[in-house]
Length: 149
Image 1 (cartoon, one colour):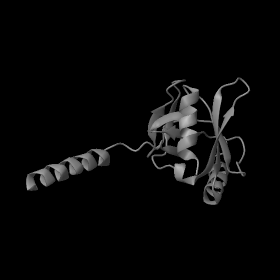
Image 2 (cartoon, helix red, strand yellow; image 1 turned 90 degrees about the vertical axis):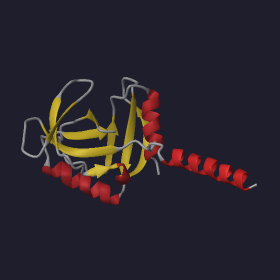
Image 3 (cartoon, helix red, strand yellow; image 1 turned 90 degrees about the horizontal axis):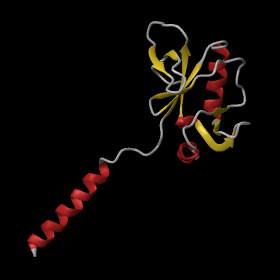
Image 4 (cartoon, helix red, strand yellow; image 1 turned 120 degrees about the horizontal axis):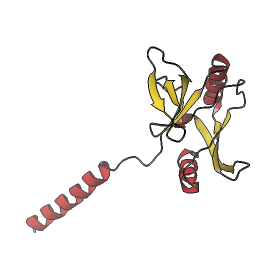
């Protein structure tokens, strides 16, 4: 009987250990100040689609934690987009960030990969941004699922 209980306990512990090592399924988002030229303290990143090279601040100003709501949308060309609405703290941070970086790019990094880098043309005061350039509708839907609260 003890041998049976010991075997059962080991089986349960092994199952728990496997589950503990599963990678997080939540996609990571980072919105970083960036520049088009080298600057001290910035790391170089390349957009995987366009090949554009940017120098990106290593610390994100905003992350998926700042997202209040994520929604599916489509561009006029019919491509999937994810519209993010930031929470109050995120909205204030984005407004200040875009005020300070007029004429410069903001790097949108998803899972460590540069995905979008629009040039800030005016301050974003409403706390809403749209992400585009997805490989598939499923990819955009997965981000909406992960970032919706």
